[in-house]
Length: 282
Ligand code: ADP
Ligand code: MG
Image (cartoon, rainbow, N blue to C red; front, side, top):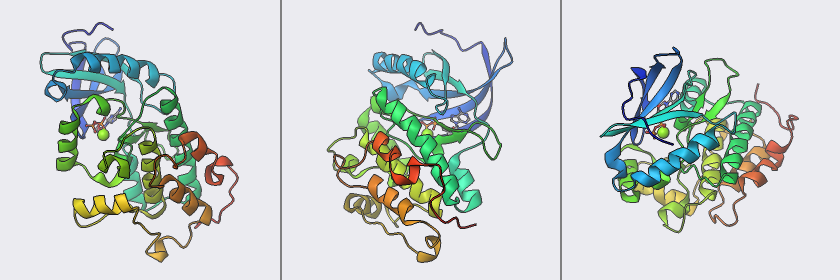
């Protein structure tokens, strides 16, 4: 893919969000009037790895077109200082904000979302890509509609960013809350880290708070390594089925080798059938 040198075909607008290493702006393709989300990444973050990044972007472009629930990368170009990636514009906001607005999700709705996201994770894994940063801030709704498609955003680049810088950045602005124990133990961060993150996301969807939230990042990290979480306080969990809890427990298996794969997680009873086999807290 030959990058164009100047991003002059787009006019950028308001800032949509910012994350671990990029700013995302609304952008209009001048010729077509089509709206996109343009992710601006400072090239300093990938010093010496430009070649890998370009390679990875070509892969992302291809992979992202293959699944309905993954934000499609349409275009990319670069200037001396920045890399610009143009994605589908999702106007429905982050899952994070919807959970916060609702307090928590009904179990059936949570299962539906988790099933959809897990299917997309399975697809990414089959393409040989690990997301590594699954969390409700990176899951976006395509439109503002209540039943809008959920989309996975922000994947694939984290593994080629300089490891130490990435770590530094998450220390400064991120929460380790969704990171798997093996990441802290530095024993690997393959596909199982995404399934762990899905366990944390499911927990969050069901009760409205995350399982390893502690006063300090150090305590949070220790809790993750020890797998120290509970389905408490009880009042937040009384309407949640044992099947759902079991699903969370499975995803939060400390040993990555024993943790289910995305394909196995999809076969768990909680996700396997769309039949409601649990009591809703309606
Ligand atoms: P980072 O790698 O810095 O975390 P993200 O790709 O997660 O960057 O983007 C940061 C934020 O920008 C997201 O959390 C989201 O709020 C917003 N955003 C990202 N992609 C899109 C998109 N395609 N449509 C709308 N908003 C987006
Ligand atoms: Mg992000």
